[in-house]
Length: 546
Image (cartoon, rainbow, N blue to C red; front, side, top):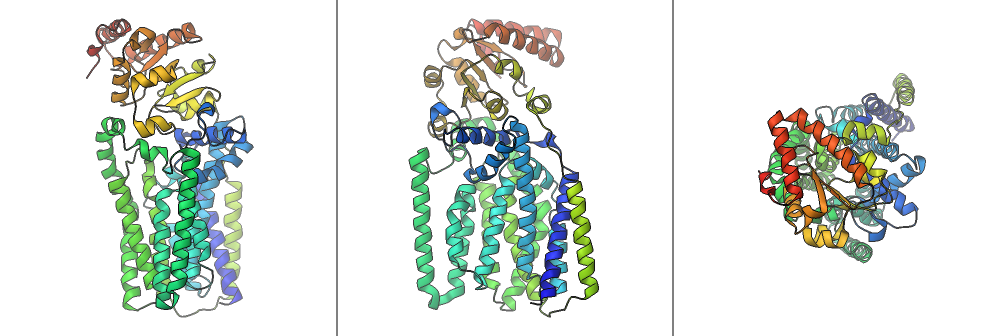
């Protein structure tokens, strides 16, 4: 590889990363920040305060984050904005997005073997620019503030190391060492670890059987240590969201939504990346027919990518799967296969002219200037987030947060968790609560043990709200309100002896009156107010049941 070729490839890579960042910055909006992104800020604050990886300090460590590795981003972001969790989540999301844009571009350039030929560098440049263009949800995933972009960045880094190890330019032990981090960042990404070990075994053949067997054994030991370590700290080696989704209240509450959105997400994914998958299949055929050295690597990653897609579609309940983000980690596999195909098709080296090198330098400088001058300035606050997204989910939350409550519960907890940092907040969906995630929701046991002073029950968690109101004495101890749409149900409950009950009751009653008057006819609104009064005496709650 000529020095000028390497320099040209680096300039092209810098240009495409800068252009992609500029595009991301130009379309950035804090209004798309996802509520669940705020959960990492609460975990980061508790960890920095010496309470470990905990949601509620009193409950101790809990494996409530699917991606523990994302704390590597959330903690620095929290340190940069210790008093503004929304800004911290924004900073973490922006940093992760830039990292992914850089890592995915670098993966394409490495797979294409850019540097040996000006045409390879050009093809890598084009592929890196165009591959997400048909995916409408691409920007939505990057601005959401979740762990997806960071997790995919680690997948890209792992695949870059795999390519180098396959070429014999890097020890495969790097793959073994990175495997546990890949698991704690995104457990299902362990598919790539299995693929890497199998591919390296096929590459070495019988002569390298002993080395491959040793690496597979060591990798297995590291995984066992990781899983045992997680279980000893968190009482489970599986993230609580995965466990919670296996219990009935998720299926009961979201079953119909899940069946609908699963098909929609797969359809959107195929619209965005179906061409890439077909191109990867075609490139694999070319590599096999040419008996290219990289054929086994391409086939291994193509198979892994397709299995990953099938697993996500058939095996994962894609609640909070906006922008097809659960499918995101499959894309790097197909990018590598296409890149390997480009490398095989463009064999003839072509020296880089001085003019081309100069043009690449000018483009890199110009694109970098655009990206640097166009970067966003995170300006989100708890107040702005509440006004944009929180009013419909946590009515009167600022008033609630000012009452000094210590025991609360909700089915959505992100914003609530950072607005009430010292309060114990039971996650009724089980995403951050070990008992509910592993045993399901048991209303009587929950009320007796946790004694919540306030409960927000959102959206369609019908089995949870039904279990609460059916619990003996519940409606004698709690005032109930129609507050969260659909307003056909009682869905906010306040214990009558809670601190600040009179203030909250006044605020909730005003919110309820406004909602009922705006959504229903006068008679319907009056009926629902009457229903609430009846519910308080536990005499006719069946009136609300659909």
